[in-house]
Length: 340
Image (cartoon, rainbow, N blue to C red; front, side, top):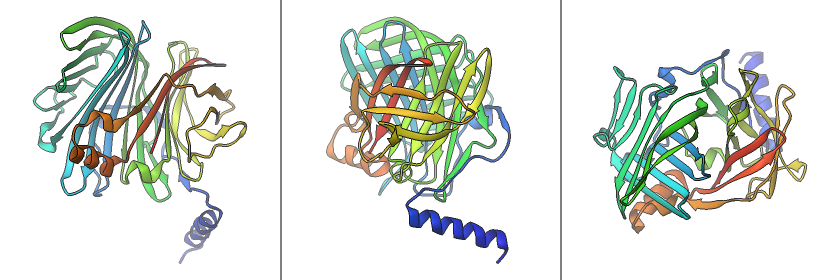
């Protein structure tokens, strides 16, 4: 056994005895995201899952969330999940989720697009200017979204984008940290034109999300000039991982979460926080904000029936989202804190 391997094993044993998670950042230099990052990253694991996520914040304050997920459902095998939720659409909130077999998921590399269920759900063209997102479902009433990015700050990723978290793999690609969007949203027969800003990222894991992160934080900001946008996971021991993009003076760079604090002490992720401070690498001013949720939402509410809800719960965990907007030293921050 080489000296390097011996030292690595000793370090892992020490971390385990202290209850500290071992996190290794991706290998390679900072680069722009590309089309290969956008397509699926299949892993040889029956716990593998992959998710493409969008946050749209409209100019009138309404918020829309869309997730397309490749997930393993016990006793059923791999499935495709699609879910949509909208907060404060004319004073009301709505949500819907559907499941499909994996043969309904089609990657068209000639157009750099992904189609689900014969085009009911769509991610058209590589993320960037012109990228289009379509969601169309008729379940407990019609839900419809069709938006395109009219501008987009380039996505950035560290190396191969793959973090090692306690021996498991977590891939993260922030494809669109900020972009203006236009399109339409419809609830029932009520369809309206919309505009606002959007954020899009993409993650995959070879382990169930609940086993890797007790809390998952997503950030985006409405200013195209200065923002921090990205995703941070927090292990059960309070160790952060993931990355964000700090954009200032038309320059983007990757920053990593160094620590996550509540009341200026290391955050205990066993419960949702009342306030958070995210300390970043590269001497970036920390994000400090009060966690006052505009909305608390369970992913299981998107699925009807005992069997369907429990299948999703077994696959991903009972995922609760707290979503809000807070003022920080950097400006307004739109955030989501997810936990199991």
